[in-house]
Amino acid sequence: MHSHRYAVSALAALVSTFALFMPSAFAQTTVTSPPPATFTLANGLNVVVIPDHRTPVVTQMIWYKVGSADETPGKSGLAHFLEHLMFKGTSKHPAGEFSQTVLNVGGNENAFTTADYTGYYQRVPRGQLGKMMEFEADRMTGLVLKDENVLPERDVVLEEYNMRVANNPEARLIEQIMAALYLNHPYGRPVIGWHHEIEKLNREDALAFYKRFYAPNNATLVIAGDVDAKEVRSLAEQTFGKVPSQPSIPPRRIRPQEPEPIAARTVTFADPRVEQPKLLRYYLVPSATTAAAGESTALDVLAQLMGGGSNSYLYRALVVDHPLAVSANAGYQGTSLDATQFMISAAPRPGVEFSQIEQAIDKVISDVAHHPVPAEDLERVKTQLVASAIYAQDNQTTLARWYGAALTTGLSIEDIRSWPDRIKAVTGEQVREAAQKWLDKKRSVTGYLIKDTTPKHEEKRS
Image 1 (cartoon, rainbow, N blue to C red):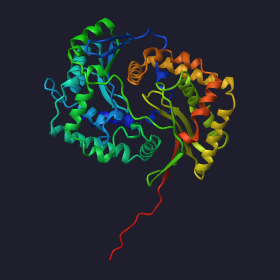
Image 2 (image 1 turned 45 degrees about the vertical axis):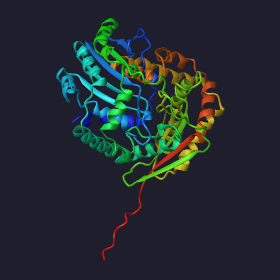
Image 3 (image 1 turned 60 degrees about the vertical axis):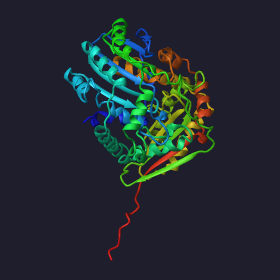
Image 4 (image 1 turned 135 degrees about the vertical axis):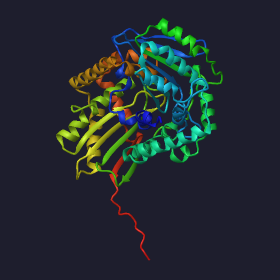
């Protein structure tokens, strides 16, 4: 019943990289509004209130600090499976009541899972906030799971896997690239899970994961909209405040980390359904959380400079000056608890070899790594990035989403709010150093998506 609602979120989760050729998440944060109010309940729940009084609407988002990278090895897909099961009802509110209430008041809802967090949100008229908080607080610990609803939902997830991964050659290639990029870190596992492991997930797995990670002291509640902090605090105390904390939750998440990369890798995925070949290259780079001062914003600027739009270096080199490709992009996924990816993508024109595309990409990287970035180019991309930060404040849900994503991956509100100023401070030398240090072939996996033209083997009739 709910499977359609997860389509967007699961795809984002599974291939968060499809949305990658956008400025980093921090680009999408408000810079002109006053800082959000924050407080912590006695049970450890962090609350962030982002006032937005333009429309009588409010967005509630609860973010759990658990994602696919926190799963037990051998049980991949469990975080995402539990996201689905969270809609199965509690003893107070049977399955479907929460969702139906959201629909009845003209609201909308969704849920999403990534490697680092799992989130649930509702956007409703402001008068409905108390009811939404009561529902969400109830299912933080009150979920009732029975085999008769767990097992069909596992089939829904397997069907989603077939639709989003098995039948999507580019998603398949990305799955293989990520597994090759991360030799030791669980980011190498797909968020949706490996098919053979999803098939074995059961009620006991889901309940154990739920009891271990779903607790107020492992969550951040973001409320954005036509509310004030005093009102939200009162509602939060009455609802979430009654949920006991979970003392066994560790103060920080510790995962196996990556060794220093020493070998460039390539992955080729051939599929008869591929109509447009594609080259994807991923580099292992620091996230906003793990980077040294100034490095993450330099990577943001570098990504925009190399592949953010029709004025970017890769687009000019591959599409405009030498018609080798029909598209060329670059992106940096800064919002991540551990080491993340800098991504380059190009779709060759008919008759163009991947080697020609790679030579052109390598030349662009070499030029940026060895020559100062022209001042006018630097100013142009900084202006684009900062402008996107200002425009994003028009969307309440986007704003809540960026705050939640940042806060659940180890960043502070100050990190988010200072992002535009830190972008403005990036120097051409920092961009050059970032290209030289991080866009080193040894740190990369290059993936080739090609059409499989092998004739199918046919059984001979005797």
